Length: 117
Image (cartoon, rainbow, N blue to C red; front, side):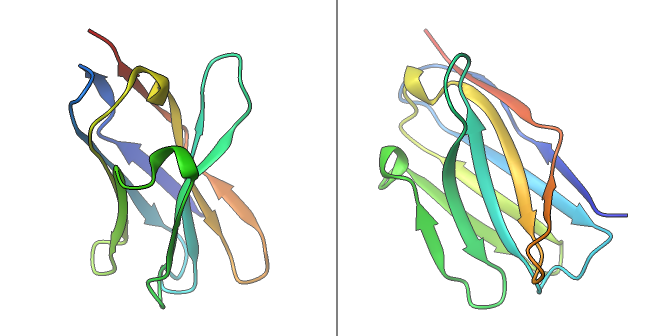
């Protein structure tokens, strides 16, 4: 059974940093495209960042370019999202997502990130 478990969320002041972690199990980690999405209250879900586990290619949504960094640790089967210079508009529930080579999507349970003074 595929499982994705997020951690590292919480409350942070504007300008602060957080690092989210997503630990995967039940699948071949290397054969994955891993992504972070976020869903702000009352708005559409949006792609934050993605990383191809084998190639290491990364992509970022425009609102987070230059502030967020996605990375992975293959040995730990973990994907990270380092979030710097956080803004109130980054407040959302963040979800870890895995897309298999056959295009099947898997989701974590989501974790709240709140940026507020």
